[in-house]
Length: 302
Image (cartoon, rainbow, N blue to C red; front, side, top):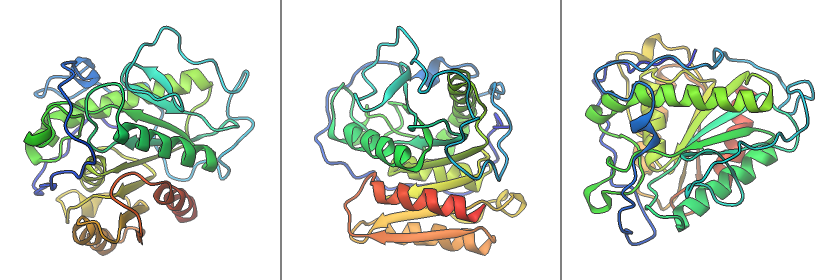
């Protein structure tokens, strides 16, 4: 099961300030869904969500006609008002967007965004949601894109949406995050009428560092992981006891995240995890080529 626990953290997870393309906007002043989610206190473990166990080796085809009951795509949830989701994706609730492919699927991507400024419109949000929507639909994969927290980004962009990338906030926030992912997965399974058999976790920039930490500490079990335009870390107390999972690492040749991303790949290879490290002539941030390669790698490595 997607476990509602945060593993002991001895690894230094100092992520560099995330690259951005826009001037910081004014603070939105709204609370993250994680702060209101069940188990939101940092001192108590979050409750387990309604999702099915995550096990390696689901259906071999992404588009399984028997995966869902009823018309496809299903009608979206009603009455949801949000500033988080662009028109290319659909709100699951006020703080999470989702994408469904052309045909029913049993594959799910949990995608963690990079730093995103507050407000309805931003280049960063439009880019990452478009990338996830286009690549996921092309691969026949469902995807959810939860919004992070607006109090964990670097000081110069303090109110931007981001993920906890230092040991203290990782330890405090991760139980709530894991419970929230289980809740969102359960909602999408209820909407589509089928359980997801393969679940992959990936992210870009701030989300890449968080995805790597989740994998290295076994905090969010999945069938594969991806760190795009970010990611760092080395051996953790948990790593040797974790089942190896395919891990995709992608970054731009001119991006300063390259050395730490390569070191992450080396650490995972030393632990006998299947790893693909890819460099591309692209700028920092979410890019479709990373997800195209990651989907192919995850499926081939199962």
